[in-house]
Image 1: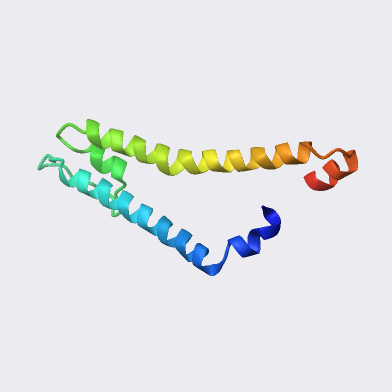
Image 2 (image 1 turned 30 degrees about the horizontal axis):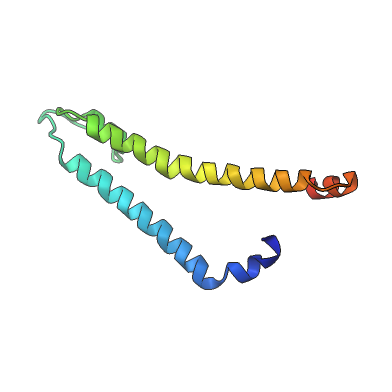
Length: 112
């Protein structure tokens, strides 16, 4: 409903969207950090970077990292794939609505 956008997207909804985004980010970070704490590392391992990515840390573990790898892949699918699917669905609805316009001039105006 594009004409009702300003009514639907009021400041409370915007604040709620920001809060949900922040909570999801914190929960993902906490889950990944707690999963890394369960790993055991070799004592002679040295990381030569001041910034360590999660993938590098899990790769240097001496214990089994199967569960950590699965959690990382699940996070990638959920945090990347679900928003991408929503965006693709939204654009497909927009294109299908524009294609239902009867006049060629209306379609041209909508696409431009």
